[in-house]
Image (spheres, rainbow, N blue to C red):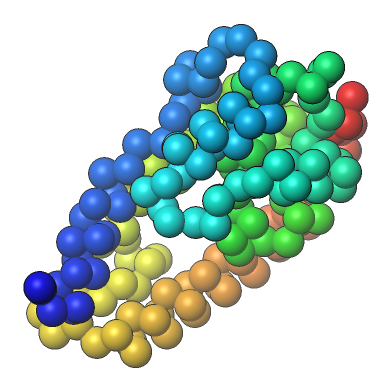
Amino acid sequence: MAPIAEDFPTWLAQLQTLQLPYWKDFPDFDIYMEQLVNLVNQYLAPLALDPVTPAMINNYVKHKVMFKPVKKRYRREHLAAVVTLTLLKTVFPLEMIRTGFAGELNALSAQAAYDRFITNFTTQLQTLQSAQAVPLPTNTEFIWADALQQTAVTTVIYQLISRRLLQHAPHINKGVNLHD
C-alpha cells in the first residue's frame, strides 16, 4: 500500500479528470424522483459527497431553491439544479444558493447558467495545481496540516468573496420566481 502522502496527489490527479455532465448529457425526457436521485448520485459519485435523497429534493422544493416537479416528473432543469445544489451546499447555505439561482435565472436560461457553472467547475478542477489562488502544496514534501489549513482558508476566503459578489451583483437583486 502506498503511503498516505502519495495518495493525495493520485486522488487530486483523478479529481482533475472528472467530467460532470453538461445540459446536453441529461435525458431529454421527464423522469421520476428515483431516477433523478440515481442520476445525480451517479454523476457525483467520484466526488464522494453525501448521496442525494428524495427528502433532500423535497426540502429544496419546500424552501423554493428549485421549482416543483410537474405531475411528479422532473426535467433537465431539476437535474441541473440538484447537481449544482449538491456541489454548492458543501460550502454555502441554502438561502445564499437560492438567491444566486434567482439572479442567474434572471439573467440567463437554465441551460446557459448550468453549462457555465459546469464549465467553471471543470476549469477550476483542471487548473488546481497551477492556480495561484488555490494554494495547494506543490513542494516535494507533503505536509498534511499545511494542506488542510491552506485549503480551509481558501474556502473561507472564496465564500466571503462569493457573498460579497452576490450582495452587489446587479442582476441578483431583481429576483425570479423559482417555484412556478
